Image (tube, rainbow, N blue to C red; front, side, top):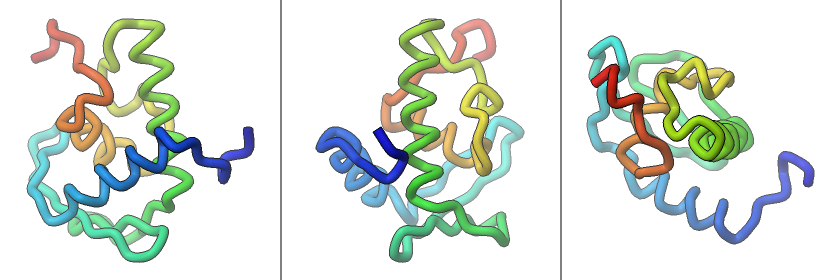
Length: 104
């Protein structure tokens, strides 16, 4: 599957993801942020560079893989993508992955 081929489940995830724009999230370091979606790009109020929909979907796939293999996603570095520190708390709220209970 190419990175640009999205399954119906991934498209449903994307719609749920964009429904969260404007809500306040907190990074692992305790920084509050919001995001907005414009076209296929994500803009965070704390970051100058945008994140593409393809990067979000790649992070989503990685989160699902790590969650299945390890039982949790212990932090944003496990996503291994640009902008992971902002995507990780959104994924946690969505229930895509869970944090390591020892770190909470």
